[in-house]
Image (tube, rainbow, N blue to C red; front, top):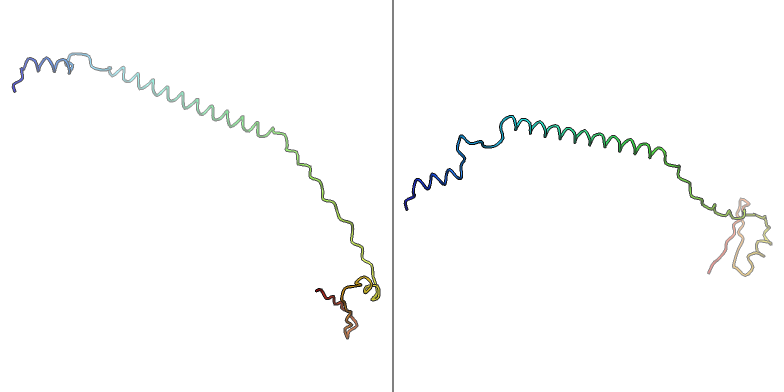
Length: 119
């Protein structure tokens, strides 16, 4: 299959620009675009830093000026009545334990021990 060189040249001229034609931005345009992009980025970073400082300062002000928390009111437990101890003799002790099997054991050193049998 033979191709016509004139048709091929016409196709290449349509697809590829001629060297004399203007192709893309000039070096001055590229430098201006780079400069503008750098300025835009600097403004964005400066704005972000300023916003962060404002947020931190506002947080510190709000945090320091919060009213103190009110302690919850808790009802104190009712204290039980104090225990009253009465001294009793052996006969009174057995009267209190009436109906319950109990024995009073005297030790050789003079102490006494009460034995209560539970069923």
